[in-house]
Length: 252
Image 1 (spheres, one colour):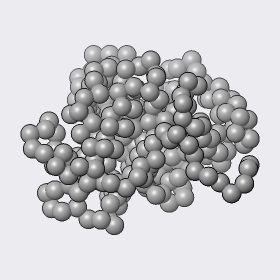
Image 2 (tube, helix red, strand yellow):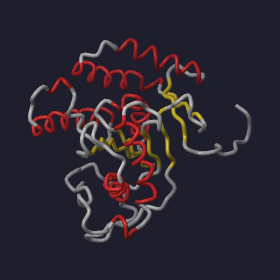
Image 3 (cartoon, rainbow, N blue to C red):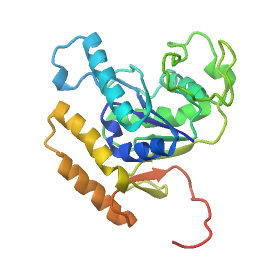
Image 4 (cartoon, one colour):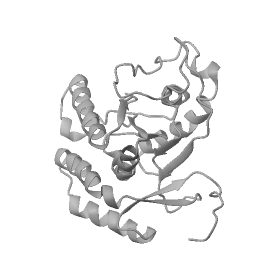
């Protein structure tokens, strides 16, 4: 199984980091994707864009390494995302390379526009990635992402790409979003009890950078409360963008 997590800023992935770590430990391929560098964080002060890029790439590499994932940054502009076709196409080209079976992203109703736009293009890219004339059309702002330097990239090797051309990705993609109380879609809880400390370590990494008042103990308490709703020690909470879940053999 291949899972891609699509978020706007480094630290957005905290809400699903235990789930991603659990899948990576099972042997699934996981890729963390950020649509921006989060360059407007006040911690950067007047640092140049090149310096911000260096620091953010270090952050992404550390988090990805901690959970056994690959990672990729786009630079769509912190608080400048529009949800445009061009943004969706950049992501669609990455779908065509990584060939995900599931995507995790933000909810549709989050107050931050970058969060909403990241969710929008993550959903739009599912359709765009299916159409070869779109993902290979000339004249777009960016070429397909170059992942050739990533020694961990095994994605899509079951269906090799043609030289210089992207093949469409048409398999079903299960679309998970951070839980939103007003969402019309079914809820899913993922038991992360065995990966709570890994998740807490990632949260602490960002806490130390941002100097949040929200601390690691409160993070653990929040995951425990979510776990109570799902009947486990600790959990992460999503909506899956389906009208109905699949039928099961018996009631829980």
